Length: 333
Ligand SMILES: NC(=O)c1ccc[n+]([C@@H]2O[C@H](COP(=O)([O-])OP(=O)(O)OC[C@H]3O[C@@H](n4cnc5c(N)ncnc54)[C@H](O)[C@@H]3O)[C@@H](O)[C@H]2O)c1
Image 1 (spheres, rainbow, N blue to C red):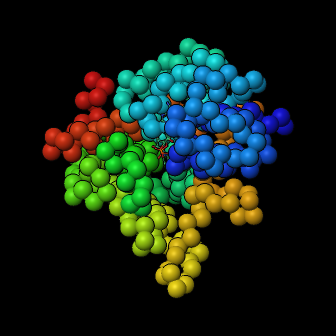
Image 2 (cartoon, helix red, strand yellow):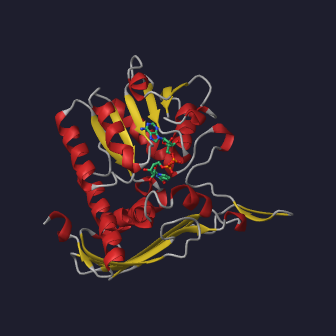
């Protein structure tokens, strides 16, 4: 198969991982990386050009695809620049920082020759996919209750606190998973801890969720795990139905190292590079997108569902601000 000629915008925390994955993937030709910060030129894979000028990057001859890894406040202009050039665009979650931006991106998907998908990585995590399959196959019966957690290390919180919120950055992953498993969300009620552990914004958010089906959900998320403690990530999903229950628990990684430096959990399942070969949910997502560019396979997350996850995250933020339960209908009438 002809390699997909790729550009990537935003060579920051997650953009660097996508770049590393693409540079090692036989179906990808990572031609150019753009970041408005010249310092982001460090660590660009060998053979890939770096520029601070987005238009210049996207005018690279023969491009097929664009990875958008900029902060969500600047998803729209970067996505638009790719879409009007007819590129296949992969945009990191969350869809955008506002519904107006998300709606404009959906219009571009309809009106340009380009195409757009939003990356919600848990849709490519084999553990979450297996639980979804069990629910879809009816093995759990009717889902009554679901709970989810994703806590991140404090160094990530320091980068993004104040720029975004725990609901829009972290809880949105699990809001999407919950909608995938249980269906539409009707109402959320959230509280946040504002102890300024890593920055100006709230450090943790918890919420209850009511689904249209009558089921209920619980979310808890933070970005304060002390990096020095050795624990880098803490995911959990539990689903309870009338005929069974299902769980994903990834706090305790299968690989653990004990040394004079203390105990270290090797966080291998999201992205790692055993023998130089990308492995994990993020590489699976990228490989799926590369395949889609060549054969048009359907992306497992409709734009309307990525938008609905954003609405639920914005509803959590409104609930935190106003101290009351928020109906999803407040956002779309
Ligand atoms: N899928 C996941 O698990 C996951 C994990 C982390 C972040 N994300 C998402 O990825 C996106 C980026 O987050 P991050 O943590 O990597 O941010 P980051 O701040 O580490 O990196 C963003 C980079 O974009 C650059 N940038 C800003 N404006 C630009 C522009 N107009 N053109 C080109 N480059 C520009 C910045 O200079 C920076 O280097 C966010 O939407 C975030 O929610 C997803």
